[in-house]
Image (tube, rainbow, N blue to C red; front, side):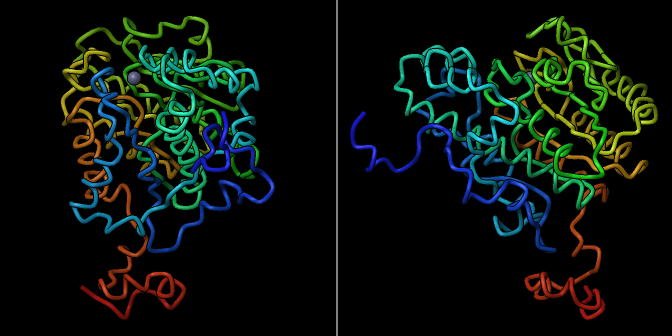
Length: 376
Ligand SMILES: [Zn+2]
């Protein structure tokens, strides 16, 4: 294709390596910032994709908007924005062959399960669909680092748990969970054992295939056993498997968490927990086919943060993963607000009772003598 000079953006992942600051280098929080990662680039502005796929393509932006409306965060300056992950960074996990396969719109159509994508020019598929996923993938890696520094982090996106190093599927094009865990093993001295708690409605066969036989990773996976992907090979990597039936209700679901989560945390004693918090467990989700209420989702997240963070002091980072009904963004935001209300997550500046004026000068304040000047 001609006129490459005039293209606004690199359609495929950037080859850049040398001058681009590393993902961990840009994951630097100021004291006033929350360890929440999000970019408006996450959202898929796609000619009516939502009509082709049971899909709220603006879910991520709505979650951010809800948190802002509730006053928990004031704006983008209060959180961290990722950049797009580069090809070189993706290659830490992904095979050249797999990344090359995404330059065919036909292959991408199969990965995202939207057949009409096959007939779109690949540069459109790259910029409108894969590029948002590359931002979200970088966001998951950043959240891992922030969790170690702050004790918790949330990526308002990511959780592409059906993608492995050499295969995509189920709307997942990049293996963000595998990448985040490997980044931590490679770059953070204190992280030698990681636990993946996967509570999306579907089996997380991507990270399972990637970590099969890896003793540093413990996978707890609870999913509807009667839906996609039913990947028996990948199931060998699950160290604690909880298989649910269609229309499982809150009571059975939450009881399973109470029975299994504390036990595996004590057994494995991880250095960090990746929490894949898909909301396709919600009643009415035609893909997940479970009957969990919005209150059930909030209680699930509260249980996970209580067991991991409050009771055991382990770092945790949460990914929003699957669930694309119209009400998912609201439920996810309500759950995050609930975690905040219960002080399972907080911002360091809140703890020092600063006034809003001082809060704006957060960076300099936190380096000073502490929060005595201001009171509320
Ligand atoms: Zn799912």
